[in-house]
Length: 175
Ligand SMILES: NC(=O)c1ccc[n+]([C@@H]2O[C@H](COP(=O)([O-])OP(=O)(O)OC[C@H]3O[C@@H](n4cnc5c(N)ncnc54)[C@H](OP(=O)(O)O)[C@@H]3O)[C@@H](O)[C@H]2O)c1
Image (cartoon, helix red, strand yellow):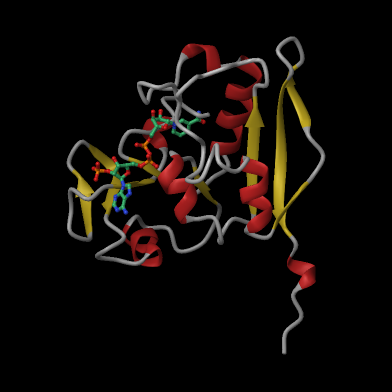
């Protein structure tokens, strides 16, 4: 679960080690992508270029409340067009959720960083991807061609860890 039954990410799901990992990773990204109810809320957030998914626009528009943000409706424009509109033609893109947005990019991740807090329970909460909890997040990532690497501990006291799931590009041989 990435949010509780009220569709809010509760404080019980927030850990210093995970926040630090997330924030330093985003400092190395050239573009952030997320749904209308998501956002990282960090010190450097205002400096970052971002694409926000919404059906509130027909294709692409500047966000009137943030000069560095672009509003994007995938029905009206491709992701490549959205990146170009945001002024990013190459670099690292961080997809930061929520679940619908994560699901849309499942076949395009080079790496998905799956953080887990095994002691937290959010009954009736929002699964991190479409199809959770019927399937586990790990089953879904594997079904999209991603493979688990070694987990790294982010917060030992609460057993919080992050596992990189990477696409095995070596398995592809060109015809
Ligand atoms: N724990 C975590 O790490 C984590 C990470 C990310 C998010 N979250 C939580 O997840 C919850 C949901 O976040 P979210 O609503 O931003 O993400 P989401 O559920 O993935 O996306 C929903 C939003 O994105 C837009 N959207 C979805 N599908 C679309 C489509 N096909 N075309 C155009 N726009 C589309 C919609 O905006 P409109 O309604 O404007 O059309 C909708 O409000 C929040 O509580 C957030 O805090 C938690």
